[in-house]
Amino acid sequence: MSKIYETKEYGTKEFLQTHYYKCFEDDLFSYIPEMIKDFDLKLLTVNKDYKEITAYNDLYDVTFKIFMYKPGETSVDLFIDSRFLFDFGKTKKVILAMFDKIAKKYDFLGLSLHKEK
Image (cartoon, rainbow, N blue to C red; front, top):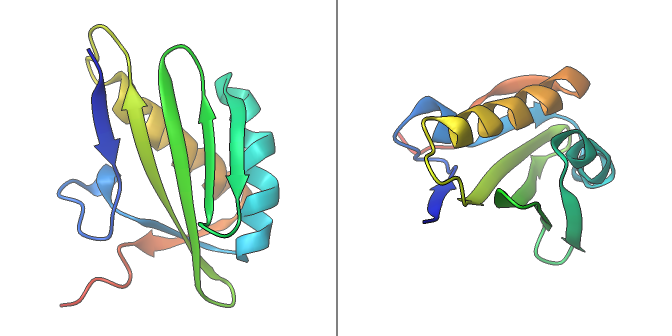
């Protein structure tokens, strides 16, 4: 039974909010295909027109949505379709680990920075 998680600007929980990093869009398009190897993921597509990178393994599919708001401020959203039989927070840990891995390479700027107030 699959469960879907999606981060977005108006995420209801902190780990489901858009994450912003100090880098350029092209930096992430180069880094993420390398980073996913640490999560035993296989690269499926890199689509610069739609600003998405998709990867998969036996346990989940993940799409990284990358958008540069201004030079040096780039957002990352994740769309994960997990196939854990019993999730018990495993997908949340994967999401946090992916964001943490990006933050080790690029400075983390904050969550949901462009949410209308």
